[in-house]
Image (cartoon, rainbow, N blue to C red; front, side, top):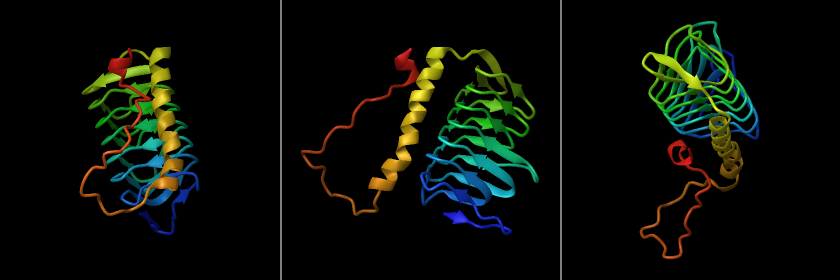
Length: 196
């Protein structure tokens, strides 16, 4: 659902896909090939949210801020299931892992990876290409070329998803039995643990 608030209407590029069960409110700008998943809450009521080209914001994520703040997700940022971005700035081609929290005034450099369940405390400034884990999150090492290649491949799947959804997502009645000729889905991407 897309909501106008206090005179601000969200701006959504036609190539983006905002799921009908997501809520996008107010002063929000969504770029090309962006995917916003079911249950995501993108609240531009007190400040502005800019989600640049090729980003994805997955199921049950929240993006919000203190009054007057602009939250920016730079190109190719990948926000994992259940993550919260509150007033932070997410650099280009970053991965914020599932259920991680990035707090106010955080500056996350380009190509950083925030581990699942990590808590990035208010005001933390993280240089480019760092891996953060823990609560509170700490930089544990540099992001390798292999790690960022893996991340970028996963994000490309999400950059293709809006077009696939525009073409083939339809509300339907469920089948009562699985058809015998139902095709298998391809394995075209694996977990980091399996890849490394």
